[in-house]
Structures are given as C-alpha cells and as structure tokens.
Length: 321
Image (cartoon, rainbow, N blue to C red; front, side):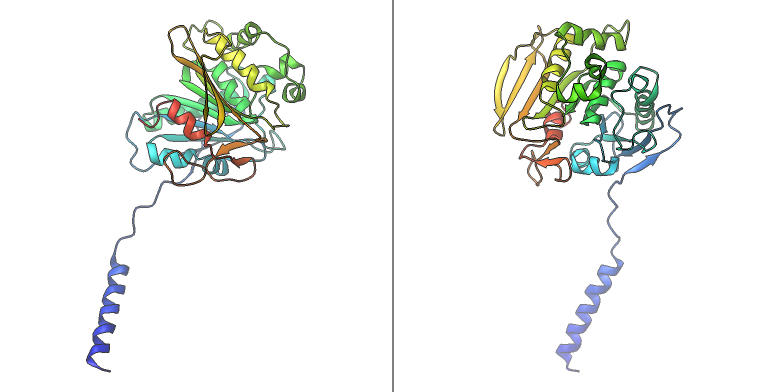
C-alpha cells in the first residue's frame, strides 16, 4: 500500500470514528398517552404533545379529530404538533374509542356527552385540568374537525371558563342535533333557530356563567356535502349573539384568495372570524410546506388548499407571540 493510500484510509477511518463517537442529537418530542387523568365518564383516551424544554405558562391547545381519524394522525396532519414546536405550546389530543362510536366520531349529538359534568365533555375537561397541572399551562384553546368541531363547540358552551377561544372546522353549533331533531338534519339541512335561540342554548349549558365566553374562528368548505355550509352560518349566529355582537361582518376581505369575515363586539374586539374555503369539500384545510404561514400534511379529510387552518387560528389567538 502506498503512503498516499494509507493516509487516505486513515483519514476515512478517523472521520468514521468521529461520526460514531459523536453523541446523537436529543430526540424530538413525541406523542404520549396519559392514563388516570380523572374518572373519564366518556371513556376517551388522552394523548398529548409537549415540546422538549417547554417553559411553564405556555398555552395549551386541545385538538379533536374527525370521524375515522385518530389523535396521532390528526395532530400531525392538521399541523398542530408542527406549530407546537415552532411557537412553543403543548397539545392535548383526545381520542375516541370504537366502543363509544363505531366510526370513531365524538358524540357531539348525544345529550349525555354534551352536558357539563357528563360523558365525553367531562372527560375532555378532565384532560384539560390534568394537562394544565402537569405543564403549568397558561391559556387554553379548543379546536376540532367535523365531529371534533362539534365537540369543540360543546366544550366552549359547557366549560367556557376553561377556554379563551375555539376553532371549529366543518363543525356544528352547540345543541344543533337537539334543535334540528336529529344529527343528520343538523348536518344536511340545519336547524331553524334565531340568533337569540342559538345563544340561549349556549347559556343553558353553563347556567349562571357571566363570562367572558370564548371567541370563535370557523372554517367551512363551500362544497362540503357532509356538513353543509349552513352550519357555519349558524355558528356565527350563535357565538356573535353570545358575545354581544350583531350578525353583520365588520370586516370583509380575502386570505389566500378565500373570503374571510370578522365580527367585532361593541368595544371593537374580534369575537368571531370565518373562512369560507371556496370549492373545498369536507375536511381540514392545510398548506404543506416550510413557509412561515404553512403547516400540515394532506391526507384523508385533511385537504391541501394553500391555507393552513391551524396557522390562522394560532395567529388569531396570539400563539406566535
């Protein structure tokens, strides 16, 4: 072996040894299941995502998956775990069980699951309390897709003191199944209620509560034939009325080419925002990529429409600050 080849071999071996002896980087946070978080009357599972080194006092986002989905897939697909790393907050991801609903839908339409202190609503409330205690969490937000959006509205109504704001994607107003007479009439036709009647349903969910009620950011596809767009119209009626605003948008503009409306209260604060995603079917809007406003990854009921709903909610809620 020539001197030159020997020197080259030594250099290669030295480089390889350096790689082998270099400590592996700290692993990124991963989804963890939490058990024993309370009496869990709704028999749900609790998962959470906590970025490594998260300081105390950071926000908590509760993200509720849609039918046929699970906690891990929704957390990643929606972009919420990606944003948690980027902005520094933790995510609670409740998961439905097939014994409760064969399609893995949260039971947003069952009276026993949408009443304060009962069923699935109480289970999610217990998850919030456990998470806030474990990570010394700050403000708490709730969001969800489809049936998860329906349960997000339930949490805003039945446990308003726990949530600063909610984000509902292709979801339903609180009490819609009861108002319409069935969940399917609610989903496909809507319920005939005035804004005051919608607001009364929310107030009845938490008797004696004087506020503040959570604010709302809502997303709806105009070509959604599973949860018809009338449901976002009714969400606007419900939550503007509860928050003391009228049902006329104060700001109308476009975001990523889609109609965006903002409803202000008497003090000029935004209490309801809506995004009407033109041509989108039933699912969660995402915008995969590495850009500052991008997040999520496309999949079943997670639709790439060049608009990431999780980013828009988080920005509205001040999570980026």
